[in-house]
Structures are given as C-alpha cells and as structure tokens.
Image 1: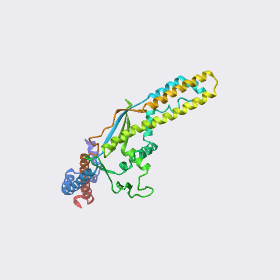
Image 2: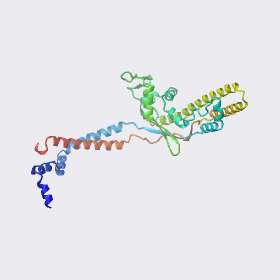
Image 3: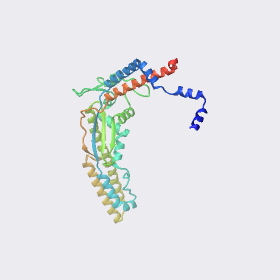
Image 4: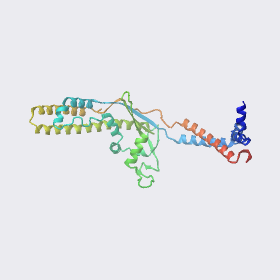
Length: 323
C-alpha cells in the first residue's frame, strides 16, 4: 500500500489532469451526436435515396452455366501407345509424348480464354454489339435495346466518343477484356474434375446461347487441332517407313500408323472431343445480380456513418464545448 502511494506521489498533479482531459466522455460523445442528429438524418437520407436510385437503375444480370466432364479418350490412347512403342519409336526420332505433357482439359480451358479463340468466336457470331453496347432486355419480347450513345442499331454503326488510341468501334482486345472479366467464368472442381462454363448477360437467352456456342466451338477447335496433329504424325510415319529397311522398325511404323489412324477416326466421329455435356445451359429465370436490397442497406449505413463522422469532426475541430 505504501509503495502504491509512493508511486502516485511520483507523478505531478498536472499528469492526472492531462490524463483526465484525454479520457473520452461517452456522455459528451452521445450529446454531441444528439445535437447533430438532423445533420446525421439528412446525410443518411441522401445516401439512402442515392443508393435506391442507383440500385433501381442497375440492369438485371442473368447467368447461364453448363456442367461438363472431360473426355480423356485421346490422352489415354496416346499414353498407351507411348508406353508400348515409345522405346522403339525413339530410335527413329519419334516422340509419342509430344503435347502429351499438357492435360487436354487444361489446354482447352486456356484456349477458351485466349485472344485467338475469342477473335474467331466474335467474328463468327457477330456478337460485339450484344457484348459492348447492350443496355436493356425486354422480358416480354425477348429483344435487346442498345445504348444510343454507343451503338446505332438501325444504322449498325458505332457512335461512341472515345479518346485515341480507342476507336468508336471497340477493338478485339477491348472486347476480349470485357468478355473474360465480366462475362465468362470457368471453374474446375478439383475433387471431381468437372468443369463449369458460365456466362453473364442482361439477357438470359443471350447468356445461354453464348455458353452453348462456347462449348460447341471449343470442342470443334480442339478436335481440328488433334486432327491436324494426327495427320502430320501419319505423314511423318509414312515418310520414315519408306526410309527404313529394318523389318522390326517397319512393324513398329505400321502399328503406329494404325493407332494414329484409329485416333483420327475417333476424333472425326466424336463431337464431344474435349468436353461431354453433363448439364446443358438453360435460360435463367432468376437474376444473379444486382443485389438491390444489399446496395440500399450498405448505402444507408454508409450515409449514417459519414454523418456521425462529420458531426464529431466538426465538434472536436471547434474545440468541443469551449469553442
């Protein structure tokens, strides 16, 4: 007890006065807030009305998605060939594992998001206006309307005003950035290996159509790539067959050509070359965003907190009650 008294006596009286002044008086704080209640209410009301207006003006966004399973027939065939004939084929300078180090599903997903694929996709379906200028969707007629300051639908001309190097008509790179960041999403389930391809748009019909087109086109592109590679392999094997006179190597070449021909036939007959559709995309009935109620709540809370902060800052900036 004596030690505590000595410790208190070690501090001058001014120290305790300063500490008392530094303490926050909750009653004073609430009193300040109560005196500024009308400013807080006004600020909250302005932000709440602004949030409501903003939420109402946001168009509904719909999402269509397709659940896909990977087709691994080609990779399994190639791996079997490589294990069976890889040693002998390497003697002739043939690498059966070429391209086999990359999983076909992973490769297809990367191709799907590539600029080259998107350019061909954009040119094929002429969807730039729906992507870059769509403003509203009429659920009764199913028709899209476009931003008049961006695109003239009747004249089919781009009229937006932009600064160089941008042009009135969006470039492929600009369209690709919007498509990959705001429209397309690809997700892979690590446990099951299933792939989900989804697209978002103000029109649920457009979103569903785009997903179906994407699945069909990526299968076609990967199928064509495989056919070209397989044909190149067959031609190369035939050339090597003509150059060798070793009976054992000729047997290997004949077997390799046979397997490559089977692979080519399977590729030509299989439309679901990379992805098999488990659950196709449908026209969505419910929007995925915007979440208008959440926008209104957050806007109201932000307005209230801003109002309280303004009242407190103004009070303490004037030195409190002594101002």
